[in-house]
Amino acid sequence: MTLFKYIITSSPIGEITIIWRKKPQFQIEEIIISNPNQTSSQIAKEKYEKEGELAINKKSKQLNKVLREMENYFNEKDYKFSLKYLNLDKLKPFQRAVLEAEFKTEKGTVNTYKDLAKEIGSPKAYRAVGSALAKNPFPIIIPCHRTVKGDRTIGGFSGFAGGLESKKTLLELDGLMIQGKKIVGDSPIISLDKTSQTKLV
Image (cartoon, rainbow, N blue to C red):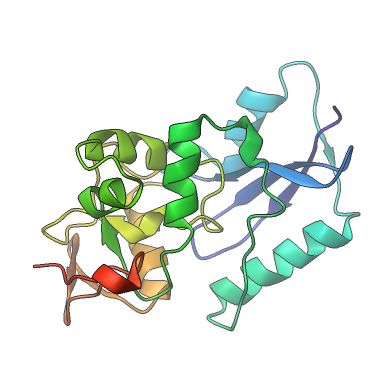
């Protein structure tokens, strides 16, 4: 399996590296965001380039479509993300269930770790939900930044891969107001299950 990379050199949360393949069909293997200690390309090098540097490649209609949607999102324009280009088959069943549920969390809303655990039928597994989100290979498309603690602080059990400042930036892009490390203003609603929506208190 030949992997390629594409580097978004500038975004509201810094450099982003996309690892992808074109055969047997186009799929994104991972979206790597920079953290306070390393750029995304440094992380990619440690994880994927031990045996040689990956070619930088943008020659894919599907990749360019994903890039356009990400650009629209970062520029606060209409966007439409899809799971169909993500290699979800590499995930363990529990993490896949968590991430597929998280994908439903709409822009401008958040959920809690406990509510997400309930949504996937494992109400006591909220700590495991936090771990699954912290290891999300597809941030931004699967918006793990939209899960917060029950007291509306934006931290988590395992943190956010890009650091809390990046999580804060993405939540602000979503239209939420953050003071310090806490969402303020009107309580955003849980968006996963429209028949049992609740407000954070």
